[in-house]
Amino acid sequence: MPRTVLFTGFPGFLGTALLPRTLRRSPDATAVALVQERWLDQARRTLARLEEAEPAIAGRTRLVVGDITRPGLGLDPGEADTLRRGPLEIFHLAAVYDLSVPPELAWSVNVDGTRHVLDLARTAGELVRLQYVSTCYVSGRYDGIFAEDDLELGQRFSNPYEHTKHEAERLVAKAREAGMPVTIYRPSVVVGDSRTGETQKYDGPYYALQLIARQGRTAVMPLPADPSRVQFNLVPSDFVVDAIAALAPHPGAEGRTVALAAPAPPTVLEMCEAFAAHTGKKLRVVPVPTTLSRFSIDHLPGVGRVFKLPSSTLDYLTHPTVYEVTATTALLDEVGVRCPPFAEHVGAMVAFHREHPDVGSAAMV
Image (cartoon, rainbow, N blue to C red; front, top):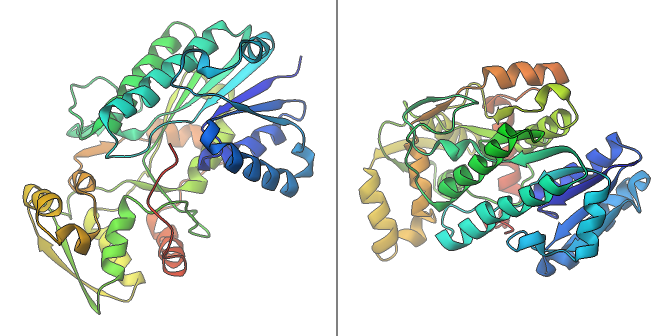
């Protein structure tokens, strides 16, 4: 019987990239994209664009209105029964990707939403695999090396996003321990495509790039702690998509947690120096304590407008965690996927930002 592939989070960046590739690898499969009502028009436009680009996948995707925060995913009972009947593969991509999100919303989407997806997965007649996208930052602010199989190390969390993604991954890990076929993917900070630099939003390291780019020949960069000793782990979006697309059908990935992080990330200082070099600036670093920076951005008139940097981002400039990716790298070698070093894709990242300054910072939730 042909499989059905359920996607949450469409038409977000991951769902838009993975849906056609998944249908391409399974010619007899059909897809069901679970879409919130408010994103339905955008989902229709996105699907039409994908089908026009790849006629072979046309007519194989149904857009279904639902909501992962509701029991049963807000699906019509008949639709839910149809999903359960045949072989079912699930790509659970929907989440709130916002460091400043209110705790209640983060819990509802990231934790309750994942619980509801797991409820459906448990009742499927044949679950092929649950492909679950988590984040490296389930590590919280763990001070040390965080391995692919680590999860509970007594870490504290910087924000509700990290905390709720950690709690959601705990639910998925428990289901996996109980026998559910699962692969967990943990991307680090995702930036633009390694070749084109294209991205849907400017956040994270882009705030530092924007601050440097809009200054004169000498760019002053206030940085906390010792920026030469803190890693900033960022990976291009095409690497994340290539890795998930290649590992989703790979038998060796079932039951695994894979850290989609850079094996040799730049330090915060190296990242800012590269941004300055590619924008033709001379970088001048000014040490500023994190607590002073956060207070200034949040409370001093005009500071937030000058720096245009959310205070929630500051924690990642002093992030103490180093991500172990040895086992993931070996697994990716089996499917021919490689993470490009920062030096290979920073030029494209800066060039896209220069050519498209109006891209916003808001994520689809």
